[in-house]
Image (tube, rainbow, N blue to C red; front, top):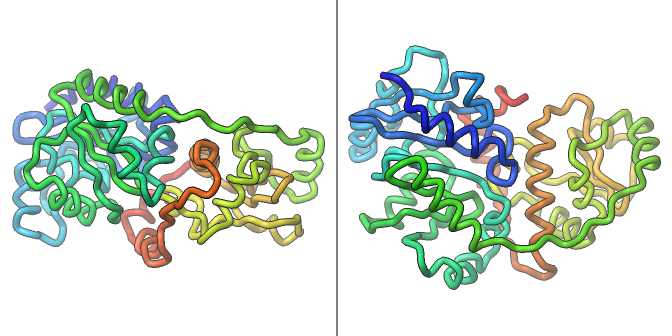
Length: 329
């Protein structure tokens, strides 16, 4: 069974926009007869043209396994002969009745999804959409069950996943993309202006620390913007799953520089800048960029919903997330 060309096309379009997905985050799917094409775990949507990033699964078997509460809903459901694993979110895609499903982590929406009162605030904005808010649940079957409980057979095209991301469903790739674009255009907010660091100072400090400069200058806002630094340094600072998986259980924020910080994957020094280990993979830059952009869109004194220690532990100790991180680049 050949992959539909529109799935590759929309995946590439989504994957090339850092404001929609970061690194290996996000996934897309296309239902074809009794089967479904789904992005593989750990693969980048941006590579849809040059790599095989999709897995074919038995849609009916997965739906049956979900209905029967089978421990592994993907058991005997993978039809592709490659070594690729279906996305962690395969069951969520299977649950939705739409032909095409797009799951993204949009910067313009994450700043709403991270707030304690996000649902109430965004209700006024999305009145013209068929949508539902799903409280945070660990990605995978836990999230699928939470969606099933929340939606309860209602006709919903848009899912807002608290502390996580956006899911939209459509009758075609173009239809799903159109819904996603309309939702995001309603949620746009302006970021605070950013004062960039002294390049020469940053270069001298990276040499001293034996670390490197971030790939994106906006990442320095985590250290230079007082509001962003406060949110990073509060309750561990972790707001969504990919942040925990790729950046760790807490954000390393410090008021001053010490040499031992050079052993960390990255470090945020208040008023100075952000410094990244030479050994860190570029997924770190992608997630830090996203986090910086999100926090620049959140005003001071907002009540944020940080992931708890138990929720972070459930992610970091979970084999599917360990697998995804091993594939990071």
